[in-house]
Image 1: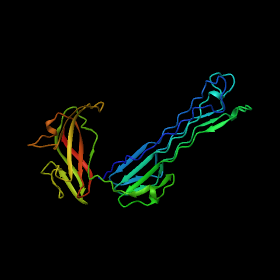
Image 2: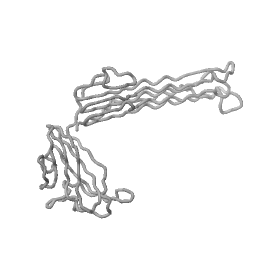
Image 3: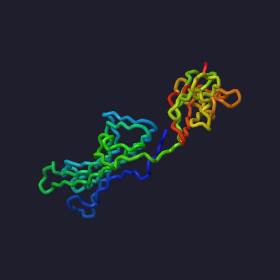
Image 4: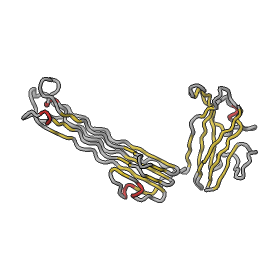
Length: 303
């Protein structure tokens, strides 16, 4: 599994606030200054690091859009002392679009839309009141568009990006060169469904290493033509397992044990040494010399 970190240069900014001054003109008492609306928030940052293929359906959307500014319209200028034309805040700007980074070590099929559009500026509009001499309209600036980028080992074409907002150009694609060859993945907790600890028998992992099928297990008697022994720290794939005491009614993990190298072992600490009715596992990948793809992980036990 290849993975890459999201560059710290990706960013999204909020819109500017409205000016702290009267919208049309100052009125008595002259010590009053009209407040300003704050700018809208920026779109933020989203990063996807995919160790295999990434497929996005035509209905899919990934959005990091800037927020829209506040809109004030139809202001009442008579009968309400707290709300009138001279007390309304000036509009703020829209937030800028955010950043989306997709780093895919396999095939990227993008049929949906990536949206990093900026937000609309805030609006003050008193024209619906139809009051002669007191009509005015002001608008804050729109937020600028953000940035999205798709990276694959071969470098995708612009057409592979899918529907982009704004429209994709050559600057939105590139080769994936930021790779981490030592990575890890961790599962959620699985429960046996029994309140008591079972007898744990073995783990079996089906994988491909360098394009060749490999089967790893802590059971030396496991029969398979592609049996490769234990998924030890010295191998491209290293397996670890951690037991947990799980409430069978709520599924809540009440306590957890230490990380073990074995589900069952006669000579080394294993899951059988812990009073647990559930577990989670961790897979450590060393792909410095070869690619590792895990197909299936099975933990065997007997109640």
